[in-house]
Length: 169
Image 1 (cartoon, rainbow, N blue to C red):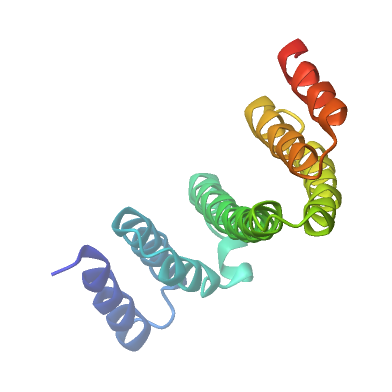
Image 2 (image 1 turned 180 degrees about the vertical axis):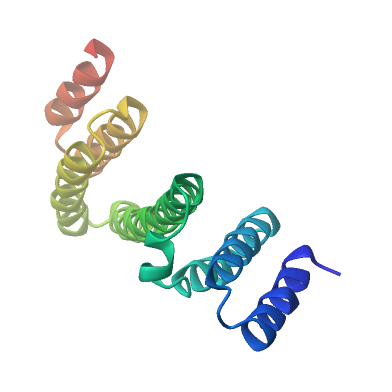
């Protein structure tokens, strides 16, 4: 059995049989939250920690209050990281879609389509420079895509300038 299920039973027993022993309930919820985090069940850990009554927590010793803050901080950090990862994945998907469109326009053999690809590639370079200013490889890759689109559109000097700019950095 999972350790946090044992704590769940203990919490239920404490709440049922010893409703006036709030300090034991708080400590059991802290232990349950810890076990849930160790098991990777972050949603359940957030719920368990959220069930701790603030007034009861204020009555607890400083070490229990500190443990609560540590657990709350770890959960907050985890969920912020999850949110940031979701944003990053969405950005990556948008960039991949734009690259596919650029590739499709560039390889169509039509100069007008290739010129549209140049505009999209310029937007891509700007987006990557703004969102990922410290990622030199991503910026260079976007600039290389721009050089390729300029070449496909017949702008050889523009493509050369882009490649020279990549080499210089």
